[in-house]
Image 1: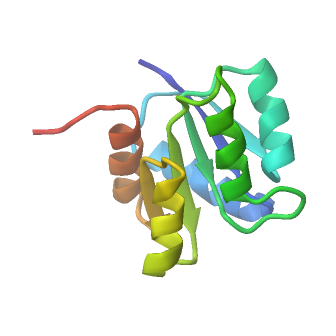
Image 2 (image 1 turned 30 degrees about the vertical axis):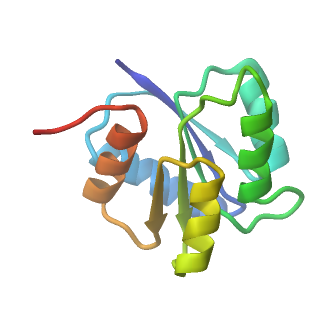
Length: 128
C-alpha cells in the first residue's frame, strides 16, 4: 500500500528534512504533502486523502495539538493516524499528545529507522 503522508511544520527546512527521512526510511510513498500550520493542514486534507499526518506542536495560526483536536472532532478525518515530531520531549507534553489519540511521538532529531517504525505502527504494520 502506497502512503499519502502530510507533513505539518512551520519550517520549510524541517518539512524538507522529514520528507528526505521518509524517503531514506524506505517507506512505500505515493505522495508527501506539506503544510505550514494546522489551518493549512486542514485545507490540504479537504482535497487529498491522507494516510498519515506527521505534525510539529509549535506553529503559528493553529498548533499541532489544536490540529489533532480538530481531526478527532471531524467524522471523516477522526481516524487519521497522527505522529507528533517535536523538540519537546517532556513526559507531560508527551502525555498530553497521547491524550489526543496520537499513534507515535518522535523527538527531533530522529533517524529514518525511527520514522519508519513510527509510520508502520501508525498504519498498523507490525514486524516480527
